[in-house]
Length: 452
Image (tube, rainbow, N blue to C red):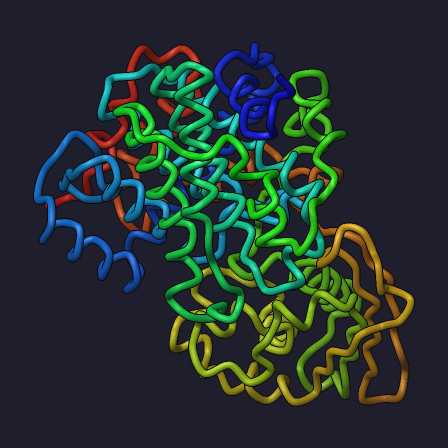
Protein backbone atom coordinates (compact mmCIF):
# COMPACT_ATOMS: atom_id res chain seq x y z
CA UNK A 1 0.00 0.00 0.00
CA UNK A 2 1.36 3.40 -0.98
CA UNK A 3 2.04 5.62 1.99
CA UNK A 4 0.10 8.87 2.19
CA UNK A 5 1.65 12.23 2.98
CA UNK A 6 0.39 11.95 6.57
CA UNK A 7 2.08 8.58 6.98
CA UNK A 8 5.37 9.68 5.47
CA UNK A 9 5.46 12.79 7.62
CA UNK A 10 4.61 10.75 10.71
CA UNK A 11 7.40 8.26 10.11
CA UNK A 12 9.85 11.15 9.91
CA UNK A 13 8.52 12.86 13.04
CA UNK A 14 8.57 9.72 15.15
CA UNK A 15 11.82 8.21 13.93
CA UNK A 16 14.16 10.89 12.58
CA UNK A 17 17.67 11.00 14.00
CA UNK A 18 18.00 14.74 14.58
CA UNK A 19 21.56 15.97 13.89
CA UNK A 20 23.61 17.86 16.42
CA UNK A 21 23.62 20.95 14.19
CA UNK A 22 19.84 20.92 14.10
CA UNK A 23 19.54 20.78 17.87
CA UNK A 24 22.09 23.58 18.21
CA UNK A 25 20.04 25.80 15.87
CA UNK A 26 16.90 24.90 17.79
CA UNK A 27 18.57 25.79 21.08
CA UNK A 28 19.27 29.30 19.78
CA UNK A 29 15.68 29.57 18.54
CA UNK A 30 14.29 28.55 21.93
CA UNK A 31 16.44 31.19 23.63
CA UNK A 32 15.22 33.90 21.27
CA UNK A 33 11.60 32.82 21.60
CA UNK A 34 11.55 32.65 25.38
CA UNK A 35 12.96 36.18 25.39
CA UNK A 36 10.27 37.64 23.14
CA UNK A 37 7.69 35.57 25.01
CA UNK A 38 8.68 37.30 28.25
CA UNK A 39 8.53 40.72 26.62
CA UNK A 40 5.19 39.88 25.02
CA UNK A 41 3.71 38.65 28.29
CA UNK A 42 3.35 42.30 29.32
CA UNK A 43 1.22 43.12 26.27
CA UNK A 44 -2.59 43.54 26.52
CA UNK A 45 -3.30 40.55 24.28
CA UNK A 46 -1.28 38.27 26.57
CA UNK A 47 -3.06 39.63 29.64
CA UNK A 48 -6.44 38.88 28.08
CA UNK A 49 -5.40 35.33 27.23
CA UNK A 50 -3.91 34.81 30.68
CA UNK A 51 -7.05 35.97 32.50
CA UNK A 52 -9.16 33.72 30.32
CA UNK A 53 -6.90 30.73 30.90
CA UNK A 54 -6.79 31.12 34.66
CA UNK A 55 -10.58 31.49 34.81
CA UNK A 56 -10.81 28.10 33.12
CA UNK A 57 -7.85 26.19 34.63
CA UNK A 58 -6.28 27.99 37.57
CA UNK A 59 -3.39 25.57 38.05
CA UNK A 60 -1.67 22.75 36.26
CA UNK A 61 1.68 21.31 35.23
CA UNK A 62 2.64 23.95 32.65
CA UNK A 63 4.02 27.45 33.29
CA UNK A 64 2.70 30.74 32.05
CA UNK A 65 6.18 32.16 31.53
CA UNK A 66 6.93 35.44 33.21
CA UNK A 67 4.22 34.89 35.84
CA UNK A 68 3.87 32.76 38.99
CA UNK A 69 0.88 30.98 37.42
CA UNK A 70 0.50 27.50 35.97
CA UNK A 71 -2.28 25.89 33.96
CA UNK A 72 -2.93 22.97 31.63
CA UNK A 73 -0.67 22.16 28.71
CA UNK A 74 -3.18 23.35 26.11
CA UNK A 75 -3.88 26.66 27.84
CA UNK A 76 -0.17 27.26 28.49
CA UNK A 77 0.58 26.65 24.82
CA UNK A 78 -2.13 29.12 23.83
CA UNK A 79 -1.07 31.86 26.24
CA UNK A 80 2.69 31.49 25.77
CA UNK A 81 2.42 31.12 21.99
CA UNK A 82 0.38 34.31 21.81
CA UNK A 83 2.82 36.17 24.06
CA UNK A 84 5.74 35.05 21.89
CA UNK A 85 4.16 36.64 18.83
CA UNK A 86 2.60 39.67 20.56
CA UNK A 87 5.42 42.07 19.61
CA UNK A 88 6.13 40.52 16.20
CA UNK A 89 9.71 40.19 17.44
CA UNK A 90 9.90 36.41 17.00
CA UNK A 91 11.89 34.69 14.29
CA UNK A 92 11.02 33.85 10.67
CA UNK A 93 11.48 31.05 8.16
CA UNK A 94 11.30 32.14 4.54
CA UNK A 95 10.52 28.65 3.24
CA UNK A 96 7.42 28.12 5.35
CA UNK A 97 6.73 31.89 5.27
CA UNK A 98 5.89 31.50 8.94
CA UNK A 99 7.10 32.52 12.36
CA UNK A 100 8.07 28.96 13.26
CA UNK A 101 9.31 29.25 16.81
CA UNK A 102 6.38 30.81 18.66
CA UNK A 103 4.09 27.78 18.14
CA UNK A 104 6.88 25.20 18.21
CA UNK A 105 8.44 26.41 21.46
CA UNK A 106 5.13 27.08 23.20
CA UNK A 107 3.81 23.64 22.28
CA UNK A 108 7.02 21.77 23.05
CA UNK A 109 7.64 23.43 26.41
CA UNK A 110 4.03 23.00 27.56
CA UNK A 111 4.11 19.28 26.82
CA UNK A 112 7.61 18.83 28.26
CA UNK A 113 6.66 20.47 31.55
CA UNK A 114 3.51 18.36 31.73
CA UNK A 115 5.24 15.00 31.32
CA UNK A 116 8.72 15.79 32.65
CA UNK A 117 10.52 15.49 29.31
CA UNK A 118 14.15 16.49 28.86
CA UNK A 119 15.47 19.59 27.16
CA UNK A 120 16.87 17.42 24.38
CA UNK A 121 13.40 16.04 23.69
CA UNK A 122 12.11 19.62 23.33
CA UNK A 123 14.85 20.44 20.83
CA UNK A 124 14.18 17.28 18.81
CA UNK A 125 10.50 18.16 18.73
CA UNK A 126 11.34 21.66 17.58
CA UNK A 127 13.51 20.40 14.72
CA UNK A 128 11.05 17.84 13.35
CA UNK A 129 8.25 20.41 13.59
CA UNK A 130 10.39 22.96 11.77
CA UNK A 131 11.20 20.47 9.00
CA UNK A 132 7.52 19.54 8.57
CA UNK A 133 6.63 23.21 8.21
CA UNK A 134 9.38 23.72 5.65
CA UNK A 135 8.24 20.71 3.61
CA UNK A 136 4.66 22.00 3.53
CA UNK A 137 5.90 25.51 2.79
CA UNK A 138 7.86 24.33 -0.24
CA UNK A 139 4.74 22.66 -1.62
CA UNK A 140 2.21 25.38 -0.77
CA UNK A 141 3.93 28.78 -0.93
CA UNK A 142 3.78 31.47 -2.06
CA UNK A 143 0.27 30.70 -3.38
CA UNK A 144 -1.06 29.65 0.02
CA UNK A 145 0.20 32.85 1.64
CA UNK A 146 -0.99 35.06 -1.21
CA UNK A 147 -4.53 33.68 -0.90
CA UNK A 148 -4.81 35.19 2.57
CA UNK A 149 -3.71 32.33 4.82
CA UNK A 150 -1.35 33.13 7.70
CA UNK A 151 1.24 30.35 7.57
CA UNK A 152 2.27 30.79 11.20
CA UNK A 153 -1.20 29.53 12.07
CA UNK A 154 -1.99 27.12 9.24
CA UNK A 155 1.29 25.35 8.59
CA UNK A 156 2.33 26.16 12.16
CA UNK A 157 -0.50 24.08 13.59
CA UNK A 158 0.81 20.97 11.87
CA UNK A 159 4.38 21.77 12.91
CA UNK A 160 3.26 22.22 16.52
CA UNK A 161 1.44 18.88 16.41
CA UNK A 162 4.63 17.25 15.15
CA UNK A 163 6.67 18.85 17.93
CA UNK A 164 4.17 17.83 20.60
CA UNK A 165 3.99 14.27 19.28
CA UNK A 166 7.77 13.94 19.31
CA UNK A 167 8.06 15.31 22.85
CA UNK A 168 5.35 12.87 23.97
CA UNK A 169 7.20 10.01 22.29
CA UNK A 170 4.25 8.95 20.13
CA UNK A 171 4.85 6.22 17.56
CA UNK A 172 4.30 6.67 13.81
CA UNK A 173 0.66 5.58 13.83
CA UNK A 174 -0.43 7.90 16.64
CA UNK A 175 1.74 10.70 15.25
CA UNK A 176 -0.01 10.34 11.90
CA UNK A 177 -3.36 10.74 13.58
CA UNK A 178 -2.08 13.84 15.39
CA UNK A 179 -0.98 15.39 12.09
CA UNK A 180 -4.29 14.52 10.46
CA UNK A 181 -6.23 16.06 13.34
CA UNK A 182 -4.05 19.17 13.10
CA UNK A 183 -4.82 19.46 9.38
CA UNK A 184 -8.47 20.05 10.28
CA UNK A 185 -7.55 22.52 13.03
CA UNK A 186 -5.35 24.66 10.77
CA UNK A 187 -6.61 28.19 10.16
CA UNK A 188 -5.62 31.86 10.33
CA UNK A 189 -6.44 34.84 8.10
CA UNK A 190 -4.06 37.63 7.11
CA UNK A 191 -6.96 40.07 7.19
CA UNK A 192 -6.46 40.14 10.96
CA UNK A 193 -2.90 41.48 10.68
CA UNK A 194 -2.48 44.60 12.79
CA UNK A 195 -4.92 43.38 15.46
CA UNK A 196 -4.66 41.17 18.56
CA UNK A 197 -5.80 38.20 16.49
CA UNK A 198 -2.51 38.10 14.61
CA UNK A 199 -0.49 37.01 17.67
CA UNK A 200 -3.43 34.86 18.75
CA UNK A 201 -2.81 32.86 15.57
CA UNK A 202 0.53 31.65 16.96
CA UNK A 203 -1.07 30.72 20.25
CA UNK A 204 -3.87 28.84 18.52
CA UNK A 205 -1.35 26.94 16.43
CA UNK A 206 0.53 25.89 19.58
CA UNK A 207 -2.66 24.99 21.46
CA UNK A 208 -4.15 23.07 18.53
CA UNK A 209 -0.91 21.17 18.01
CA UNK A 210 -0.83 20.06 21.64
CA UNK A 211 -4.52 19.19 21.56
CA UNK A 212 -4.07 17.13 18.39
CA UNK A 213 -1.24 15.13 19.95
CA UNK A 214 -3.20 14.57 23.18
CA UNK A 215 -6.29 13.41 21.29
CA UNK A 216 -4.21 11.10 19.11
CA UNK A 217 -2.52 9.64 22.18
CA UNK A 218 -5.95 8.78 23.57
CA UNK A 219 -7.10 7.12 20.34
CA UNK A 220 -8.98 9.72 18.31
CA UNK A 221 -9.06 8.63 14.67
CA UNK A 222 -8.54 10.78 11.58
CA UNK A 223 -8.14 10.36 7.83
CA UNK A 224 -4.79 9.15 6.53
CA UNK A 225 -5.47 11.37 3.49
CA UNK A 226 -6.06 14.54 5.53
CA UNK A 227 -3.21 16.36 3.79
CA UNK A 228 -3.03 14.97 0.24
CA UNK A 229 -6.55 13.61 -0.24
CA UNK A 230 -9.05 14.95 -2.80
CA UNK A 231 -10.56 17.15 -0.09
CA UNK A 232 -7.47 17.42 2.09
CA UNK A 233 -5.34 20.33 3.26
CA UNK A 234 -3.54 20.95 -0.02
CA UNK A 235 -6.71 21.15 -2.10
CA UNK A 236 -8.67 23.12 0.49
CA UNK A 237 -5.95 25.68 1.23
CA UNK A 238 -4.08 25.73 -2.05
CA UNK A 239 -6.75 25.05 -4.65
CA UNK A 240 -4.70 22.16 -6.05
CA UNK A 241 -2.69 19.16 -5.08
CA UNK A 242 0.66 20.90 -4.58
CA UNK A 243 3.92 19.07 -5.22
CA UNK A 244 4.84 17.41 -1.94
CA UNK A 245 6.92 14.59 -3.41
CA UNK A 246 10.26 16.39 -3.51
CA UNK A 247 9.93 17.95 -0.02
CA UNK A 248 8.80 14.63 1.46
CA UNK A 249 11.66 12.75 -0.16
CA UNK A 250 14.16 15.24 1.29
CA UNK A 251 13.03 14.78 4.89
CA UNK A 252 15.83 13.30 6.97
CA UNK A 253 18.35 13.71 4.14
CA UNK A 254 18.38 17.48 3.90
CA UNK A 255 17.81 19.58 7.03
CA UNK A 256 16.18 22.94 6.32
CA UNK A 257 17.09 24.31 9.73
CA UNK A 258 20.78 23.67 8.99
CA UNK A 259 20.96 24.49 5.27
CA UNK A 260 18.63 27.50 5.11
CA UNK A 261 18.53 28.57 8.74
CA UNK A 262 16.29 30.88 10.74
CA UNK A 263 15.92 34.64 10.49
CA UNK A 264 16.32 36.27 13.90
CA UNK A 265 14.52 39.58 14.12
CA UNK A 266 16.44 42.61 15.31
CA UNK A 267 13.40 44.89 14.96
CA UNK A 268 9.97 44.21 16.52
CA UNK A 269 7.93 44.64 13.35
CA UNK A 270 6.83 42.63 10.34
CA UNK A 271 9.87 41.08 8.67
CA UNK A 272 8.84 42.69 5.40
CA UNK A 273 9.80 46.08 6.86
CA UNK A 274 13.32 45.02 7.84
CA UNK A 275 15.20 45.51 4.53
CA UNK A 276 13.87 49.08 4.40
CA UNK A 277 14.57 49.75 8.09
CA UNK A 278 18.14 48.48 7.74
CA UNK A 279 18.82 50.60 4.67
CA UNK A 280 17.37 53.83 6.04
CA UNK A 281 19.17 53.47 9.37
CA UNK A 282 22.45 52.98 7.47
CA UNK A 283 21.83 55.98 5.18
CA UNK A 284 20.90 58.18 8.13
CA UNK A 285 24.12 57.26 9.93
CA UNK A 286 26.41 57.41 6.89
CA UNK A 287 25.21 60.85 5.75
CA UNK A 288 24.22 62.28 9.14
CA UNK A 289 20.69 62.90 7.90
CA UNK A 290 18.04 64.66 9.98
CA UNK A 291 14.27 64.73 9.43
CA UNK A 292 14.45 68.09 7.71
CA UNK A 293 16.84 66.62 5.13
CA UNK A 294 14.21 64.17 3.85
CA UNK A 295 11.90 65.33 1.07
CA UNK A 296 10.56 61.93 -0.02
CA UNK A 297 11.15 58.20 0.37
CA UNK A 298 9.98 55.87 -2.38
CA UNK A 299 10.10 52.13 -1.64
CA UNK A 300 9.59 49.64 -4.45
CA UNK A 301 8.43 46.22 -3.22
CA UNK A 302 7.30 42.85 -4.55
CA UNK A 303 3.63 42.10 -5.17
CA UNK A 304 3.18 40.21 -1.88
CA UNK A 305 4.34 43.07 0.33
CA UNK A 306 1.18 45.24 0.05
CA UNK A 307 -0.95 42.27 1.14
CA UNK A 308 1.00 42.21 4.41
CA UNK A 309 1.95 45.83 5.09
CA UNK A 310 -1.63 46.99 4.96
CA UNK A 311 -1.58 50.12 7.16
CA UNK A 312 -0.22 53.29 5.57
CA UNK A 313 -1.57 55.53 8.37
CA UNK A 314 -1.51 53.34 11.48
CA UNK A 315 -3.57 54.30 14.50
CA UNK A 316 -2.17 51.71 16.94
CA UNK A 317 1.15 50.10 17.72
CA UNK A 318 -0.08 46.80 16.29
CA UNK A 319 -1.01 48.46 13.01
CA UNK A 320 2.33 50.30 12.96
CA UNK A 321 4.16 46.97 12.92
CA UNK A 322 2.49 46.35 9.55
CA UNK A 323 3.13 49.79 8.14
CA UNK A 324 6.15 50.35 5.93
CA UNK A 325 5.35 54.06 6.08
CA UNK A 326 5.61 54.16 9.86
CA UNK A 327 8.68 51.93 10.10
CA UNK A 328 10.51 53.94 7.45
CA UNK A 329 9.63 57.19 9.22
CA UNK A 330 10.74 55.86 12.62
CA UNK A 331 14.04 54.66 11.13
CA UNK A 332 14.79 58.12 9.79
CA UNK A 333 13.55 59.92 12.89
CA UNK A 334 15.48 57.88 15.46
CA UNK A 335 18.12 55.80 13.67
CA UNK A 336 16.72 52.78 15.50
CA UNK A 337 13.49 50.79 15.75
CA UNK A 338 12.99 49.31 19.21
CA UNK A 339 10.05 48.06 21.22
CA UNK A 340 9.30 51.54 22.55
CA UNK A 341 8.75 52.92 19.05
CA UNK A 342 5.45 51.05 18.86
CA UNK A 343 4.14 52.28 22.21
CA UNK A 344 1.69 55.17 22.38
CA UNK A 345 4.39 57.82 22.82
CA UNK A 346 6.35 56.45 19.89
CA UNK A 347 3.29 56.24 17.69
CA UNK A 348 2.40 59.87 18.41
CA UNK A 349 5.95 61.20 18.05
CA UNK A 350 5.55 64.43 16.01
CA UNK A 351 8.78 63.87 14.09
CA UNK A 352 7.68 60.40 12.99
CA UNK A 353 4.20 61.67 12.13
CA UNK A 354 5.75 64.43 10.06
CA UNK A 355 7.80 61.95 8.04
CA UNK A 356 5.05 59.40 7.35
CA UNK A 357 3.39 61.39 4.52
CA UNK A 358 6.76 61.60 2.74
CA UNK A 359 6.93 57.80 2.40
CA UNK A 360 5.49 55.97 -0.60
CA UNK A 361 5.25 52.21 -1.12
CA UNK A 362 4.60 50.83 -4.61
CA UNK A 363 4.92 47.53 -6.40
CA UNK A 364 8.09 47.46 -8.50
CA UNK A 365 7.70 45.33 -11.63
CA UNK A 366 11.35 44.31 -11.34
CA UNK A 367 10.64 42.70 -7.98
CA UNK A 368 7.51 40.77 -8.96
CA UNK A 369 8.29 37.11 -8.42
CA UNK A 370 11.28 37.90 -6.22
CA UNK A 371 12.15 34.91 -4.09
CA UNK A 372 11.52 34.66 -1.27
CA UNK A 373 8.79 37.31 -1.04
CA UNK A 374 9.06 40.15 1.50
CA UNK A 375 12.86 40.19 1.41
CA UNK A 376 13.65 42.68 -1.39
CA UNK A 377 13.24 46.43 -1.80
CA UNK A 378 14.38 49.23 -4.11
CA UNK A 379 14.68 52.43 -2.11
CA UNK A 380 14.98 55.97 -3.40
CA UNK A 381 15.46 58.83 -0.94
CA UNK A 382 15.07 62.35 -2.25
CA UNK A 383 16.79 64.96 -0.08
CA UNK A 384 15.62 68.51 0.51
CA UNK A 385 18.56 69.84 -1.52
CA UNK A 386 17.47 67.82 -4.56
CA UNK A 387 19.98 64.98 -4.31
CA UNK A 388 18.73 61.40 -4.63
CA UNK A 389 20.04 58.28 -2.94
CA UNK A 390 19.14 54.87 -4.35
CA UNK A 391 19.66 51.41 -2.88
CA UNK A 392 18.62 47.93 -4.01
CA UNK A 393 18.49 45.65 -1.00
CA UNK A 394 17.96 41.96 -0.37
CA UNK A 395 17.51 40.75 3.17
CA UNK A 396 18.51 42.44 6.39
CA UNK A 397 20.62 41.97 9.49
CA UNK A 398 19.54 38.83 11.32
CA UNK A 399 18.92 36.84 8.14
CA UNK A 400 20.78 33.51 7.79
CA UNK A 401 23.33 35.04 5.40
CA UNK A 402 23.85 38.00 7.77
CA UNK A 403 23.25 36.28 11.12
CA UNK A 404 22.88 38.05 14.39
CA UNK A 405 25.96 37.74 16.56
CA UNK A 406 25.94 35.91 19.87
CA UNK A 407 26.22 39.31 21.58
CA UNK A 408 23.18 40.62 19.67
CA UNK A 409 21.14 37.53 20.47
CA UNK A 410 22.05 37.55 24.16
CA UNK A 411 21.47 41.30 24.35
CA UNK A 412 18.07 40.91 22.76
CA UNK A 413 17.12 38.21 25.26
CA UNK A 414 18.16 40.27 28.27
CA UNK A 415 16.44 43.40 26.97
CA UNK A 416 13.21 41.50 26.32
CA UNK A 417 13.31 39.64 29.64
CA UNK A 418 13.87 42.90 31.52
CA UNK A 419 10.30 43.93 30.69
CA UNK A 420 9.10 41.11 32.90
CA UNK A 421 11.70 39.74 35.34
CA UNK A 422 14.73 40.93 37.26
CA UNK A 423 18.15 41.13 35.58
CA UNK A 424 19.38 38.32 37.83
CA UNK A 425 16.48 36.08 36.86
CA UNK A 426 17.01 36.87 33.17
CA UNK A 427 20.70 36.00 33.44
CA UNK A 428 19.94 32.69 35.18
CA UNK A 429 17.38 31.79 32.53
CA UNK A 430 19.80 32.66 29.76
CA UNK A 431 22.44 30.38 31.26
CA UNK A 432 19.90 27.58 31.57
CA UNK A 433 18.69 27.93 27.98
CA UNK A 434 22.22 27.74 26.61
CA UNK A 435 22.51 24.24 28.10
CA UNK A 436 19.00 23.05 27.27
CA UNK A 437 20.32 20.16 25.15
CA UNK A 438 21.85 18.52 28.21
CA UNK A 439 19.16 19.43 30.73
CA UNK A 440 17.29 16.44 32.19
CA UNK A 441 14.16 18.54 32.67
CA UNK A 442 12.46 21.73 31.53
CA UNK A 443 12.03 23.52 34.85
CA UNK A 444 12.33 26.95 33.28
CA UNK A 445 9.17 28.50 34.66
CA UNK A 446 10.53 28.70 38.20
CA UNK A 447 13.43 30.83 36.95
CA UNK A 448 11.14 33.33 35.30
CA UNK A 449 8.78 34.48 38.03
CA UNK A 450 8.71 38.28 38.28
CA UNK A 451 9.45 40.00 41.60
CA UNK A 452 6.45 40.36 43.90
